[in-house]
Amino acid sequence: MLVVAVVIYMCGYSQFSKATLQASGLTCSMCSKAVKVALEKVPFVQEVKVNIKSQEYTILFKENNNADFDALKKAVEDAGFSVASFKITGNFSDVSIQKDKHLELDGKNFHFISSGDKVLNGMQTLTIVDKDFLSAKDFKKYSAATKMECIKTGKTGNCCLKDGMHSEERVYHVII
Image 1: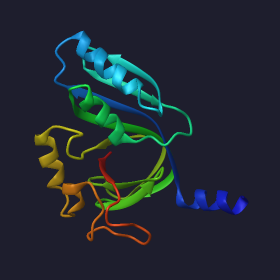
Image 2: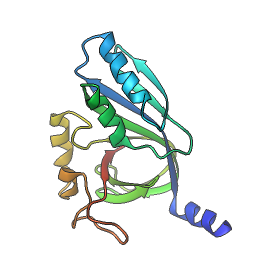
Image 3: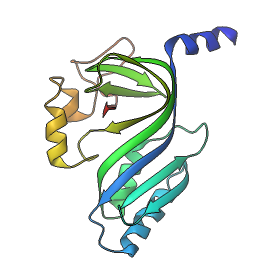
Image 4: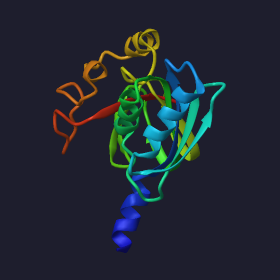
């Protein structure tokens, strides 16, 4: 067990605890409530707080539960709306990131689009810049920041495979 703990520490650690998303297409308080109810039905969601004025939802995750960001996006879409912005917050410990590189965090693959080389510690917020997680205009802007094909598909491909990765694994493209 001690060896496992040392390996986790040496590789860095992250645990995502919440997401903040902004929905688009809402026209009334009933629309906001429909999105809130849909998000609350997602199994790993502990609580959803709504700011009706900004159409923003703060989603707290259950502890030690692997959050699925695509499931949250799907819940919003199933309620009849779309995601305009999606941010995830996690607690990081010695996580080294590099611009335009992939990294596995909390069991998920991430591609850091515009970060530069740095080490993440403490609470940090990442913005997902994949298609359908932001406006088409913003996606176009961020997708131009990388030449890797995975930005178009959201899946690892020949451009970004590492040891142990498969060509159809989900990869989230993020900025800090």
